[in-house]
Length: 399
Image 1 (cartoon, rainbow, N blue to C red):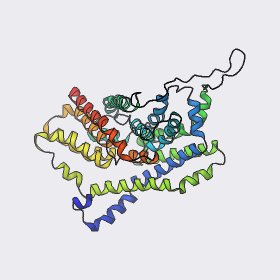
Image 2 (image 1 turned 90 degrees about the vertical axis):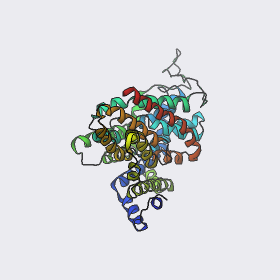
Image 3 (image 1 turned 120 degrees about the vertical axis):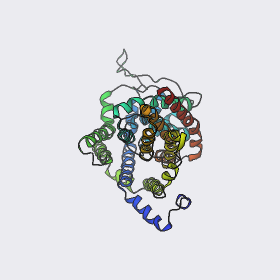
Image 4 (image 1 turned 60 degrees about the vertical axis):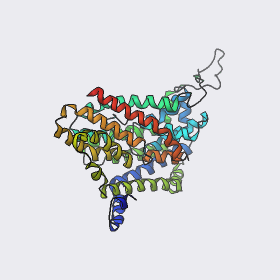
């Protein structure tokens, strides 16, 4: 439909789709998603995810904290489709708390992205800083309030007791023994060594990806950052296999099962759509509207939101609209207000990404929990509108 409506010649359709499938970004993303699913399956089928969650229970005594801990933690890992990484962990916790599947999908999707407006290792933040000639540290500092907004909206609309009823009992922490020397039953001891041992594969994945991405950015900027994430995930899978002898057949079963290939089909379809978007000149057509007195608002609000919504990818709205924004700022002599407009564009584009059903994390999360996209999407509309409203308020505060 996109190709037809924007006049992309039919003869170009096969080539556009084919180039999208062999593009390095598509290949890396497909590989990363496949490795995530294999890794998640290993942790799940060997019981290590459950054991890790049980060992953390002594520290995460509040049910609501346990629900969002892993999505927030995995959010530190700058990889596309990362919500499918935290989904099995949240699923393990939520089963014990009897959380409905729709709420599981919503919590996993929303809290996975609370870092995205400022975490300096996200490629979108790095690209925005580069295009706008702003230091990454400065853009991260100004983007930090976005995380507070995301956490507040997530609590109010998805996690507070009136929205998600849970048993509010704070779990007891075990003691080694009572006065008579008898161990306390039905309690959860705090054993940091056990937590570290069971969480080692996860630590390897997160810390390895972060360190390798930093190393690539500093010493080999020509190397795709996804290579670091891929290497970290392979290392994490290796650690999980060593800790669970005889688990190699489980990894092979994960590779050949239909669920993995369905997920990869979603990845390929989204990237074909993105390339058709570019080949048909959709962004350029929209950008032509950016003229006159409303040029800055169009460049900072409308275009990032629309490109974020139709692509579902941070790099797409940053790469497609930030050059236009910086150009309009220069033409209008408004460079002294650059940071205010950059933050407005980040909030706008991020809102578009969060409220689109084309966001790959959203699609994969709903797929994983076997829920229909529509009811989950309906519950995202109001928080996303408020997120954009907070961005507009922040813009006026900065300017």
